[in-house]
Image 1 (tube, rainbow, N blue to C red):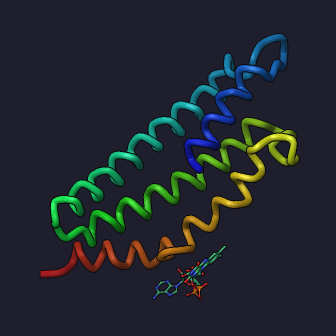
Image 2 (spheres, rainbow, N blue to C red):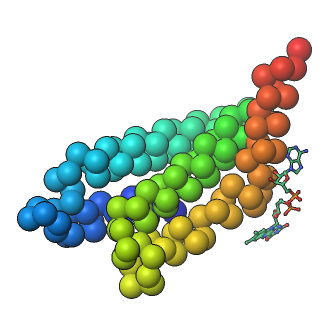
Length: 128
Ligand SMILES: Cc1cc2nc3c(=O)[nH]c(=O)nc-3n(C[C@H](O)[C@H](O)[C@H](O)COP(=O)(O)OP(=O)(O)OC[C@H]3O[C@@H](n4cnc5c(N)ncnc54)[C@H](O)[C@@H]3O)c2cc1C
């Protein structure tokens, strides 16, 4: 969902013209895209790390919770910024941004809420 929201926003920002130029030419929009792309890569790396540890038969309680917490919250942030980049069009069904925004919140609730992921992480950090 994070990648979908990012790709839709990237595409739209190159198409939408305001003040005589594509909105992707504005630094304010570029910074949003840069943050989205960076956080998506970080979320992927955390997820791949947990997955590769699992494949290696290792215990991944801490790493899985970190990956789930971070990736789901990144997805929410990306969907939010995706709508912002679309402006008013982010609010209507003609563009995918609103669906990402509507659907993404489940990620921080289902399969262990963000609060519970933080609880699991903190328990792992504080044990011993
Ligand atoms: C669209 C959707 C699809 C779903 N699909 C499924 C499914 O297919 N299968 C399935 O089994 N479930 C499914 N769920 C349920 C989902 O797993 C639960 O909603 C989720 O686990 C949270 O439980 P709850 O709704 O009872 O919230 P609650 O447990 O009542 O939590 C409410 C709030 O309190 C916080 N909280 C609760 N306990 C603590 C604590 N000890 N410390 C700190 N904070 C706490 C939570 O993090 C949350 O912010 C789905 C939910 C949604 C919205």
